[in-house]
Length: 365
Image (cartoon, rainbow, N blue to C red; front, side, top):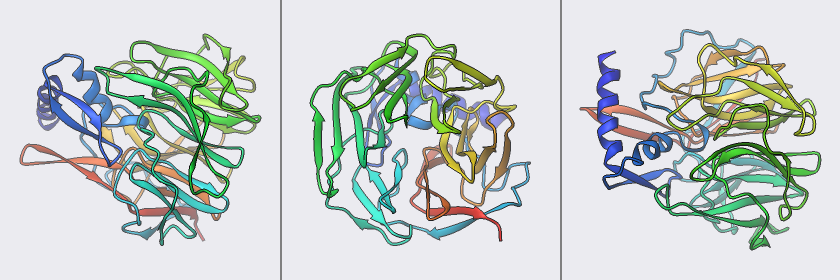
């Protein structure tokens, strides 16, 4: 308890006197500037796109009181992938190959162990704020961002990978994409969908979609779920689902919703779990919803949550270090996970640990 209070005091002091900008790890570096808005900035950057923690204390591996699932096992593929240690970058199963879209370039692999840096250059999309989606046999990048919270400037440019995956093509230098960061995005019914998010001033609970990434239609202005940033959005059982997220340095959502059309929403449960999560990485595997790398207000966990219906959830610990901002996808019949970030305190100083190990989960034999 005393350690938690001490950490909060340390963070509060550094938060009040700092602001942030993105660095090459996909994270942030601090600059000294006395401005009260920095409090929200720092709290956000500790977890970036997939979570928000008021402290950054992490649980050590295996510290969870819950028992791991006996039905699945985790296997470490490599201690270090070919790309640099980082967090908040995505991986895709694209054309039967694993692709990592990293801030320092793009890498591909046929097995998750041996990685090759692609000719496709780094785009510069700030994936702690905005997202890539896999759509129409390409990877699309939704929007641009410059500056930081003290001077947030967003663009509506849409880019996609070329057919040979060697360059980026401009779909639209300017599109009708809403000016947002920290939105939820997915692909459903032949369209790209954007849900919620933050524009530097306001939080949203609207729903947009696009059949080409250029023209966007607002399907719902005010969905029944609360305004929020960083909602986890995905497709499961032919429906769009939304869960978690919340207000930076404010209320954290613990509800689960689904829809068939973005207009009519069903609240599946008002309680995802006994302790709300701000985020994690969602992946559908073995006909179940998995949340990998749980972010909660007391830090990151080496844990996953799983549900077969979106209503009833179970949590289990994992053998990898606690972390947030992980990348996941299903490849070769396995659930792959890499990247992430967590923190430790050494001599009263907070030290961040970044990862590039690769793991996969599969049914136990």
